[in-house]
Structures are given as structure tokens and as C-alpha cells.
Length: 89
Image (cartoon, rainbow, N blue to C red; front, side, top):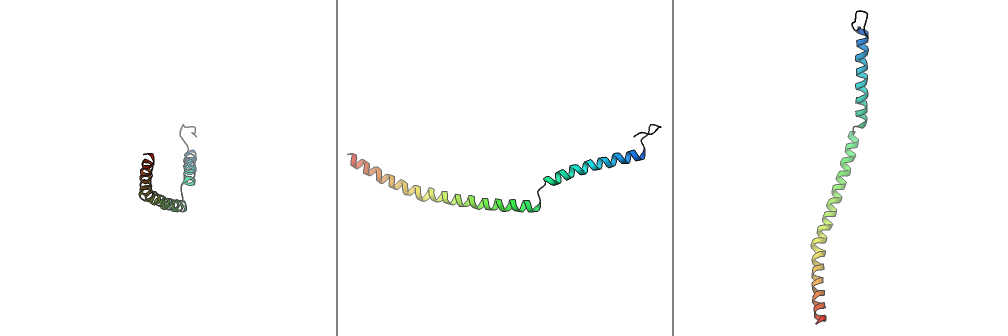
């Protein structure tokens, strides 16, 4: 590391710099392995798109039930209530 004069040698400095670059390269490779590829992002986009369509379908079904079925059920309950009142008199 240090020569007889107490100074660092050029060879040792070069080894230190090379070691630093190796360390950075290993960290970069680790990050690179965890990164999503374009293909990964494309697949994710397709899944989100399909999920969006399914949510829209469910929304349409629920809206239809709220407006149609509930309204019809309310009418039927009113008729039944009138019938029960008429019978109980």
C-alpha cells in the first residue's frame, strides 16, 4: 500500500481504483437484475388493461342491478305490503 517513503505506489492506487469499479459493477448488476424489462412492462400493461375491462363490466352489472332490479323489487314489495294490509284487516 505504502512504499518506504510513506507514499502510495501507483500500482496500489490502480488496484484500489479497480477494486472500487468492481464493487460498483456488482451493485449495478444487482440492480439491473431487479429491474423490469420492456417485456415485463408490456405484460403488466396488458394485465392492467384486462383488469380495467373487468372492472367496467362489474360496474355496468351493478349499475343495471341498482336501476332495474331494485326498482322492480321496490314495486313488488309495495304490492305485497298492500296485499298484507288488505288481508290483515
